Image (cartoon, rainbow, N blue to C red):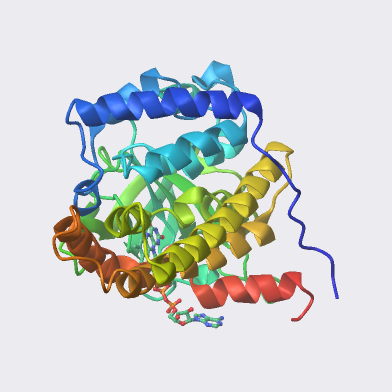
Length: 387
Ligand SMILES: Cc1cc2nc3c(=O)[nH]c(=O)nc-3n(C[C@H](O)[C@H](O)[C@H](O)COP(=O)(O)OP(=O)(O)OC[C@H]3O[C@@H](n4cnc5c(N)ncnc54)[C@H](O)[C@@H]3O)c2cc1C
């Protein structure tokens, strides 16, 4: 059996823990000022440009990036702490989160200098919202079957086709899109795709059609391209070779604490509902959930430590996402059972029931977004040398 899987045992350094206190104080101020309420925030769409700007002023967006692009050159472990604290209270980070997590790092690696100089500082100021254009009506898991075409024309490319499930496209300033620039080859079926930076606000021929999920929230969209012109300079990396780039982006997307903290409010409210003196069953149940969460957290910290060390932990990131999203998907049902005998007049009973209802409705998406359970398990099996 291969020993390709490795979780370095990493602990958060003192500067990361010091930062935690600062982040908590900031979030408490924001909550006190009424910017958001951790109990009702899950029902909102999470877009708050003013809040994102204030986060940017603190230096907490693009915080691992070079200073010349507005970054802070801080570690992935410090970024981990910021993400964790924001998620723990469901802070509204949708304006900046995708750009911070993955679009900015792609630009740093592959964009020409003048684009980096222009866009990266705006991201760090919390002024830029990004979306990811990978999935299409006929290609989701099989990214390399993408058929939305970018055809060469004078000075650039014309894009035709559609992307689907594109989170935040209705608010995004930019998309990083994966488009077909030539056919795949017999030797390499992944050949022929190119990554582009698309200006979503100033490009003619782009229509964003909303898709509401069953909670009623408008999170994702269909994006239709009809002869949408993208200049040559917006090609990211090598034409026809995006498969090398798009897969390394996924290590950032799959490994963070957001992969098991999207509905963490359920655990928080469960602890509150069971109170200071839970019965044996409640105490055992919470103990089990917290121990599992702690393990996931150690694994996710480890992946971030490996990112900090310049490694590309795609496999370990997939394990964190698979375990984390499955844990989180089961959380509402477990919490419902553990709270079955809680008094109806427990202080937070109404909030807890409402949040439970909401988390139950969004649970199915957790193991689909960012790569499905089956796809992740295929990657893990390959890493274990099983396929
Ligand atoms: C909330 C949410 C937000 C999203 N945001 C974005 C976004 O911003 N940008 C974007 O590009 N996409 C986004 N997606 C799309 C997401 O990445 C895809 O839905 C996902 O990759 C699956 O693709 P699909 O829906 O086409 O399903 P399919 O690929 O058709 O899969 C259908 C089923 O078949 C299984 N399956 C497929 N291939 C295999 C295989 N080889 N082996 C075993 N089983 C297999 C899958 O696991 C799944 O259960 C989002 C999805 C959700 C739910």
